[in-house]
Length: 113
Image (cartoon, rainbow, N blue to C red; front, top):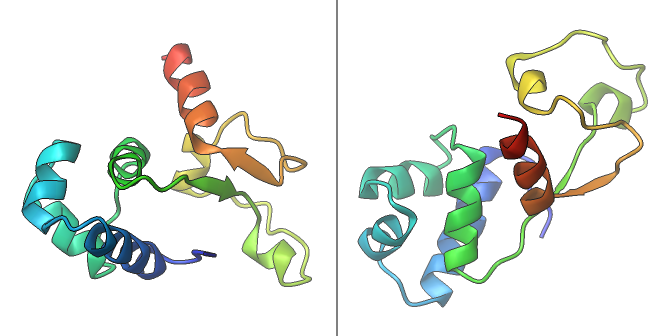
């Protein structure tokens, strides 16, 4: 499933949670977050940490892969060259890396900290 927005991500999480037969409370407990985190994410109203997402999808048996792209570049326009707050969390990712395994990315960057 291709996920482009937090709303898409929340929908994917909800489907996987329901398929796994878990309540929001049960998933939250296994992830180590409050039920409200699950509720907000499923509604597309959260800005989740990657580590929490990885754990949540791990609990649900879903593998995450992240594709990095500049939305302007993807739309056929040249990249803006402007950095966003999210860019700092992706430091070290190379434009030629079309697909980045989230577990590998997290392991590499947690080791640096």
